[in-house]
Image (cartoon, rainbow, N blue to C red):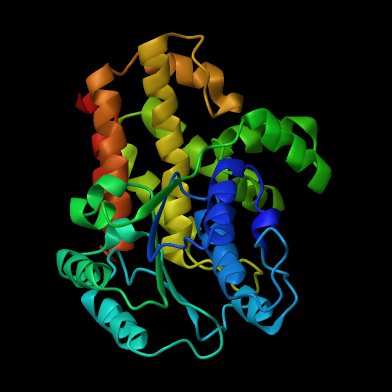
Length: 343
């Protein structure tokens, strides 16, 4: 992938190309922005540009040389991606990176490490990275990708070139989806709305044969719980847990944890809509366009404080599930706390 292929992040791409053109590539970058907005894709495209054997006049990657092809396939020895182990990026992973950085690049100009979800670095990992940033090898480029930069040590942030990624306009995402997918107009509008400006997420949802069905299943379960007694929490948790189990003979290769995390995203958007209606009134824009009447009714049953607490509860549950806490127990506790009767 080339930087020119990244859609909707013109300011970020212009800044990265400028650093290449001016020969002022930094040793550390901090890519910040919402999930699925293109940060990791851009990091890989930037790595391709830095180590491309035949760069364009603008400094972008050619996309065809051996280095570009290896980075695209994520098999390049000089460009590595570090992903969290569970809900943390652990010190062992960082130590392995430090050992690799003691060697010069094998074929490219730079040895590049992309640290995904850098906001999951534990304190030991952060301190180890800080030591690298204080005296980096001349060929080292670290790209920290995160959604919450304030979770990182200020001393790390101060040593990084910050590149901010902005949500795209929903209207622009709708136009991109129309060009790439043959879907009904109402589905295009709903997917664009659910993406909340994250093009990568919109493309994933549009390409998924199960997104519409799975989202509706989750929200119908939540709606049934909220209209009924809180004792339904156990049944609702069981329904989602079973739904998240990997399916035999399916092309869907997501793990149970990945499926549960996506379900929690649907529920998080649901409560974000309730909070928006609570704050701004019934004319507030909502993500879940097909549930507007239910959301307006439920907004009357929640106080603002309760709606805000629900969002925190869902995010905490996501953290627990990614950390391998028993899903059934985590979901049961969450649904009990989400019920409007428990204000």
